Image (cartoon, rainbow, N blue to C red; front, side, top):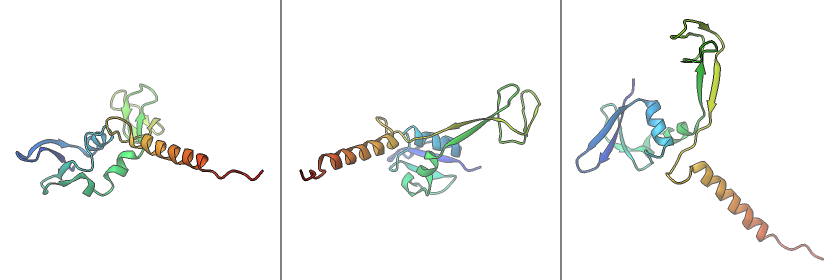
Length: 132
């Protein structure tokens, strides 16, 4: 499995990790990893997170969790056997979570929404008057 490491100090090359890909995506969503954050994958050289193709797009994708309909324990994607109650599951209860990327103040999707609102307000204000 791929392991990710985050550099926390450029001078000392202190690092955090290893992180599974899902943990790295959570850090992106929480705003802990930005495009400027320095990362490495397994034993590779260090590089900026902006160079990881699809990282920020993947963090924005919805996540799906599956739960056993009998005991409500989280399970893998069906078909699967629940590790808690032993039930064979062919159709699980699903929970879909829409994800955003936080910058610590406001999520990027909220910022984009605000940009559109500002643009629309400018269009309304600058709309030429109708002839009387």
